[in-house]
Amino acid sequence: MNAQPTDQEAQAVQVVSCCAPAITVTLSDAEAAQLADALSLLAHPIRLRLLAILARNAGHVCVCDLEAALPVKQPTVSHHLRLLRDGGLIEGERRGQWIYYAIRQDALATVRLLIDQFFASLTPDKA
Image 1 (tube, rainbow, N blue to C red):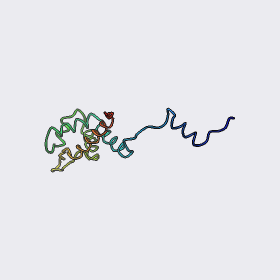
Image 2: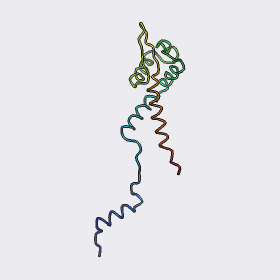
Image 3: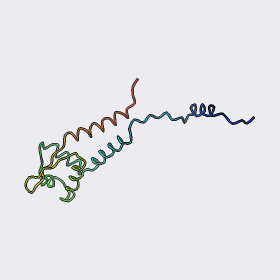
């Protein structure tokens, strides 16, 4: 009398089981990678300060002024500017021996939208 359950009976048990997967994935692998890249780009105090300085000063700001405004050495400032430039958040324009930097508003708006959408997806829907 210890008969094995049929496939149909086993499936019914799995569906009724408390561990049945009822998870909805709202963030694709690509979206998660894109958001993680954006957040890691912002996740450093010097980069945040550089963005704040550039945002407060409309137009292009000379790298020499950026270096003077921060409590780190020139190579560190250059490193963080390169990361922001490679990440597409800022642009640089050479004028003589100096480079002038500015925020790319379109890229910043995209990052803001990604972050806003992600946090909005964490809020439970109200019926």
